[in-house]
Image (tube, rainbow, N blue to C red; front, side, top):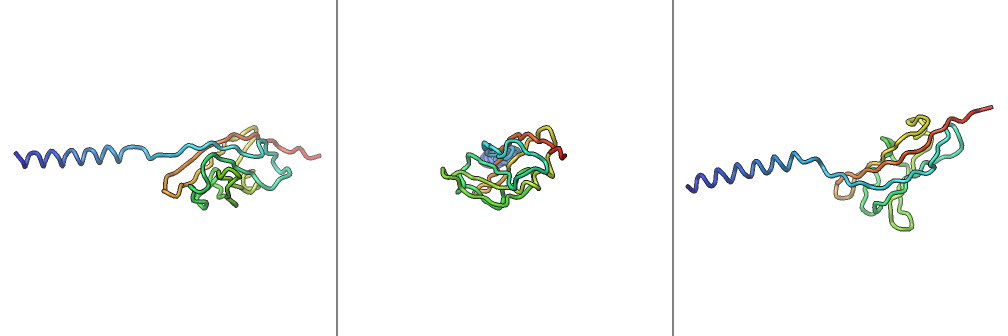
Length: 128
């Protein structure tokens, strides 16, 4: 009888472990606001800045990317939230008119991924 209980307990443990492993990894959703909201290809400007609602102190700065582009600079705003800057030329190379949705991704100091997206307007600069 005790052997049956042990076997049942082991099977239950294996099933519980398998069910836990099958659960999709947690991704923390963050609000992202990109600036400028409208990007003029080959236009003026140096930076695309992402403002978020995740604490800067909770983030591994080197992990922050915008649609695969590594952040050039990461810092806290005056409320302690993550702000990330990306070279505008690098962003221009991956967007297309009339608009594009860019996703900011990264990892927290606990190793948990976070992500959030914003859509920016993309315009072509008409040269004279």
